[in-house]
Length: 488
Image 1: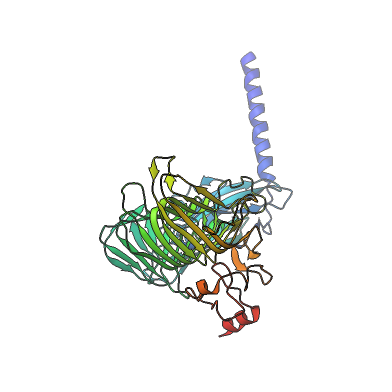
Image 2: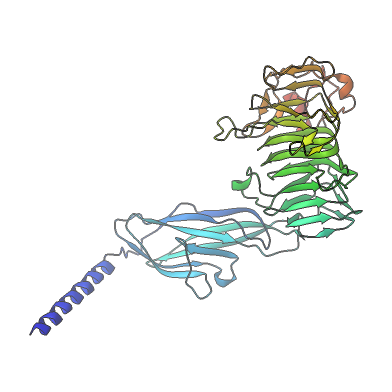
């Protein structure tokens, strides 16, 4: 008898559960007019490299009703042929070919995420190709979709390659994986318009020679391989370009370097050679450590901009020989409200490194018609060891330094202005280091005889056709002249 009661109780529980389940199933909103709502109608990927996966994007789907919905099917329209990949709320699709899932329940007034990635097939063309698909949702027989679009770009892959004497042309971009090494005695020439992209932690090491031959209209670009807007201003995405101490005759003309750890490192500590490089119309910005790092080497720079670097814009250590003319050093790292303010100067000059372990002569460090400024109270610092020469000179420059910093010694300074805002157009958000029309370093501060050595600015504008040359790498040009130039 007792056993019979237990069986009856169990039967009642099962009947109740079945009835409850049936009620739950019946509770789904089953109207053929049921429609999901979406956070976007199109998921658009910026240009991604063919054969290299994209970042993960997402969108949300919403149930706008007071009753739950059952989405009978979510699938990629192209099925197993699609180059897109999906998952729902972080769970991969369960279809045989991983392109669809069925019977997804969405509670009343609830939402869930759809995650999307894409890999674009190579097309052996320098022109971007458009990869398209859509995510299809079927609810109560009602078909809806969200479009997927991605631009793909084919490329030359430089994967840990030992580079001999060769020329890179702008037929397709170059994508560097790992460390590419220009071998001793060899020369890499990079022609106008070439775009060089670096994967995470990738670098170019030069034992021989590199000649970057961009033009004002077709500069050479060095930047990370993440082209999505999310990564457009993220530093430390690649390591840098490293010129070993034995490397000679290097040239960077009309080049842009962005979003790495070090833009260009000149020299190293592994041998006693002196690397050398000439920089002309070069822009380096948003480097996690330094824009230019030099160790006992030689740099000749004209029309150089080094902006917003995590530690130093330019660090010249263990001596060397340096001359920068019409250079703009503008370090506003962290913006107006930096959570971790930079504690290092924009410009650091030293004849030692690693304490006193390496001491070498600073033969010359000359800055002419230049600006050294930023959002720190002291943007110049010296590391001087009396055991070696320390020769430096600032000629017609604007600097931001502590009030106690003396600029009166004629052996080291000539016509140097302290702590006057140069009034860049927008150094914080858009990194525009052109001078405003009201800038105090226009026309009357720079020395004309120095400007005659570099008569055109970084953009090719004349310095010698108005009332006087301006300090820095960019000459102020009236807006009406700019407009006429653009119309031409």
